[in-house]
Image 1 (cartoon, helix red, strand yellow):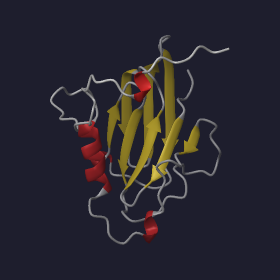
Image 2: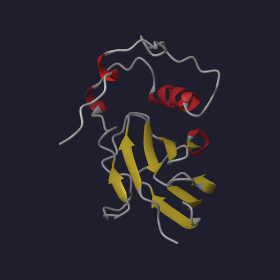
Image 3: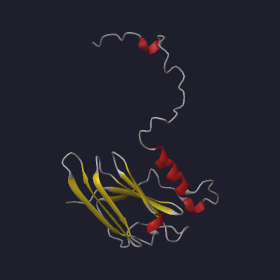
Image 4: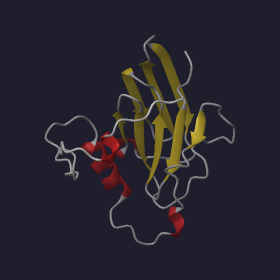
Amino acid sequence: MQPASAKWYDRRDYVFIEFCVEDSKDVNVNFEKSKLTFSCLGGNDNFKHLNEIDLYNSIDPNESKHKRTDRSVLCCLRKGESGQSWPRITKERAKLNWLSVDFNNWKDWEDDSDEDMSNFDRFSEMMNNMGGDEDVDLPEVDGADDDSPDSDDEKMPDLE
């Protein structure tokens, strides 16, 4: 048993943490006021993962959620005190080798005064749009169904 690798980022009302486990099964996420526990079986060999995090600050366990995908499990932790920045996700300053900051999603929200949609609304919308729903309308792409030849349909010369 070993911890799953994870990435986290901070927002005004929520903290997000993504556990990067492909093909996870038996996912269990337990939200407590000051602790998060994650466990699952992952990969082709059903390797057991267990992560326990004593959180930097309190969360609202009833308003915290998670969503499993084929590649990861994303957790949305509702902060106990909205608007308070979390400089780290862990209570202790210890460096955990399986935990890193998700700089692709990091945002300095403290300087933003107006957000048109709350982060939780965005999270909920993103979660509702995830998955393989057949009734999702995809935008039309010009020329996607066009069978007419174009410049990239020409035969390529042989390499020498």
